[in-house]
Image (cartoon, rainbow, N blue to C red; front, side, top):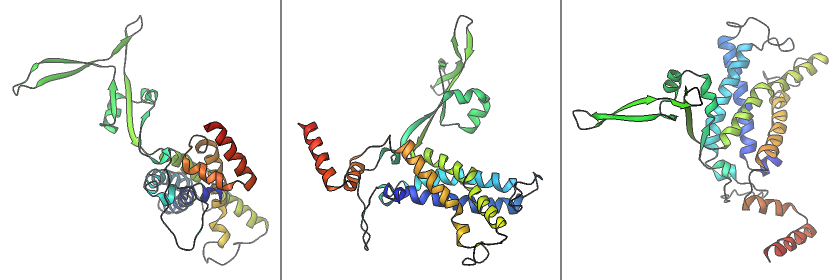
Length: 274
């Protein structure tokens, strides 16, 4: 419930990530299972394969990156609220910074590990090689300057040549949080299903129930969701709540206070304002 109050995106996105991982792990396992890695993934779940586990994680990260950006466009997803009504109405709030598009610079040290030709091939427009000088040598037949790229930076007493790279990405910061949640949904949350399998084996049953035939019962749809919801709550309070303060969030917190606490809060605000 706290995830919902903080904004519906913190409830919807984790659920969809787990569903995506479940589906793509199944598809990857059916198409590529035991074709590349013969080793058993886990004894408790003999039908699971390494290919399914890896493929599910890969596609979950991709879906999380684009899905989070799409959901961040709607105030119904981003606005915190604790008001409920039978007739839905438009939510309006001051949208937090993590839902606004911004320019993020990728750490330049990461590019030192890759060949220069590969960097230019993979990111032809976003990656800029800085610390290079530009020389112009006359003009061509059309009267345009001929530009040669040219000299690497030189530093230190040994005149050692080096290059610096910088990549600017226009992203919505929630996408970075979505990567963390996607990795958790891919690497940790699936083991909620393994725990459920261990419980079933301990009691000698095949399925928890038959409410959803072929899926092991209703509980099999929630075993991963429960651990994912807890991880989302921890992630939000650790990495998001501290760094995002807005008028809408302060009003939301104010409404959670009791009558006496509200009076104390207003008195403190009055003292600060005066």
